[in-house]
Image (cartoon, rainbow, N blue to C red; front, top):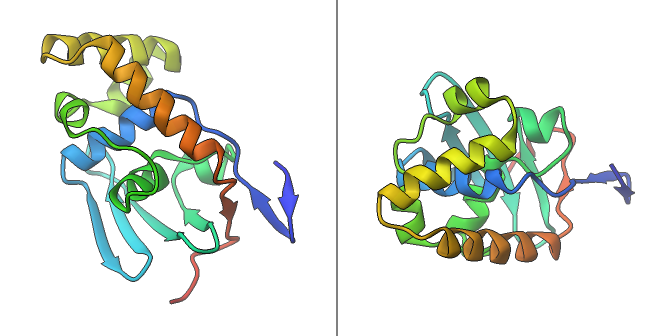
Length: 158
């Protein structure tokens, strides 16, 4: 992971994380708890992620596995960026992702490409086209790529 001014720059996430973030929003699992601070509950409800996003400095923090251990922008940060209007969000696509058991799918398929295929199949059954899904993922990834988010070493005090 690149380092800028002593702070690591997060890598781009797998595309599926854009969809997972929209699903978290549709499920109502993202809660603002203070300035720049959020709480995101996992799809199974057994984990709570602490998230910090400063849109001015692009300094972020989340204790989800993708961010913490793999060095990419995890879905909790992406969900917050969507809610803050910093990266694109589509309510229709998000609604089609409501209630998806993300952890179960990840454990069953063990590859993000296979999970994405299954999630798209479910969304199509719920009335959203694959083209619309791919378009919002592409737009969100492009916006995210331009941010170069920096990871705070711990949850900043506000």
